[in-house]
Length: 112
Length: 114
View 1 (spheres, rainbow over the protein chains, first blue to last red):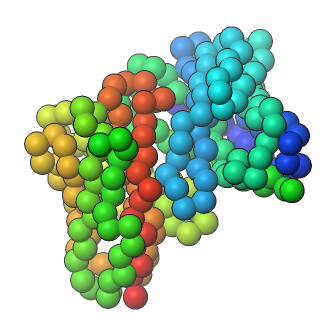
View 2 (view 1 turned 180 degrees about the horizontal axis):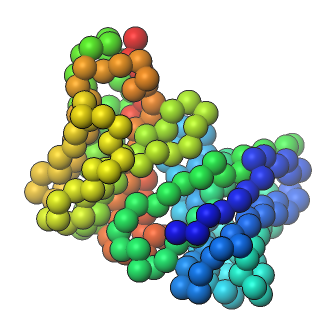
């Protein structure tokens, strides 16, 4: 699986959009970008994933650059409950059930 | 059940004692994973089970750690002769298929070795 790079921490004002970047310059053609988050004292939670098109669901939007070397997770109206560590993971769907590898992620603090 | 259930939620044990941690995956999920997370650290993969195949034990930190999965469902992680560095949150996840968005994590067991 390709390596990802994320800033260690970010702050966001409550109600504003939180934009979390991820660099994955060595991503290969069949690898997807996945985002998980881990709220304090809980297990990680799946958020969204994509290949090359932008994706949106009820939790977030995922913007992937045309060259696929970076992506941004967008929480359109951050709330205090969105304070968590956000993990960007690049992975091939052919990885089977091999375990996800989590990096250090970005610690997002949503401030009132 | 509706989610992945882990027990106990908290465990305090004396150094040198053995502990067993339990994971009940989502019914029908064929894959089960154990991770641990030390204070302020990232998630460290320990072991995973896929159906009836031999488990991938490549992440187990020492031979004091073992795990089994009975009947393709419930899993038990056993730590023998616990050490203080074993203190961590032990997380279990299960998934129904190959796609990574199928992962569902439990809330973990917080193990403290005193």
